[in-house]
Length: 369
Image 1: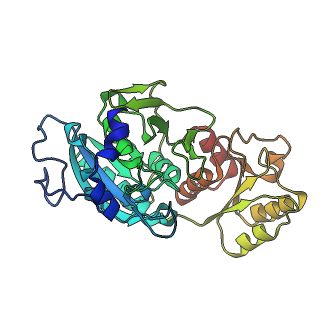
Image 2: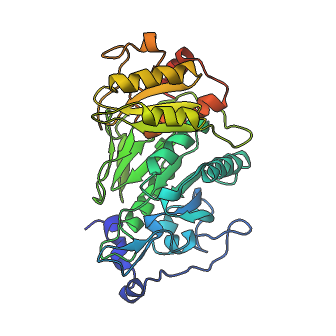
Image 3: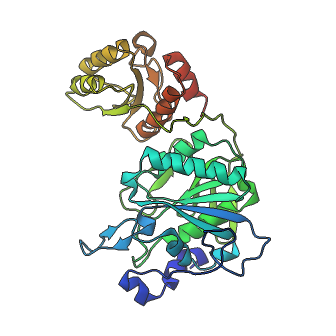
């Protein structure tokens, strides 16, 4: 068994049974911080760990045999349960939030983005690792990848099982996330997600299974690399993409996702228009298709000045322009490779930046932002 995959078994069984992770108390390399070891050599890279909660910080619950409460332990406690990570980097831990990721929100996103910018601008860290719940990890990763313009590594990781589980995956994922963040070849690759020995790019990664450890896949592209306790291997070249500005007021406009289905009418779309949505993303059938009634409602939305993006509820494939739907005639945007959740984020950022013309928005979707 590999070192990283067995680290969870090294936690004292008594502590695991009690639902308590060991707490570390050691000197920090900066004020008001927690680090992984007092003996960490000064030559090791500096990694800022930003904890947000999630299953990786979860603790077992009596609700069922697999029940747990997310965000039950702190980031410092989490790091203390990862043997050997202190030999990879000097770790500084900050608690940004401690929530299940279904409660992830714009306020936490802006807090993360600003803290990461500050850390790199002030030379506080060489890399950042974010611990995060898996439900919305792909959305947070994509948001950060779109607004951060830095060559420094930013890596998200999490867990599918809480730390008190018999075969918890969090410690191994945390170890490997730090290993990827500190690898020289990681620089300039944008925001990454590291889970289950695999390295994913933020644009492509998606959660695909409710409970399996191998839930994260890079749809339409494949992973960008792999990691184990001995090595970090990238299988694609580093790619630079443009970035959008972070709204100064830390506000994103209202954009709704409408899920398409058989016997669909335009009621959900009309409700979104009345509710003041500035944008709509349709999780369409097949290649982003909707019923004739729904398409008529989308026309009403466009006439009302609402930007409409066609995405798909299907897991794989691109939503292409002008196939079954005449996007040019209806004034619609095709999401191409972006799933509904990521299309929503990109549209929000574009609208916040003042971009409202469908043609301009389409160019940005196609540019790989």
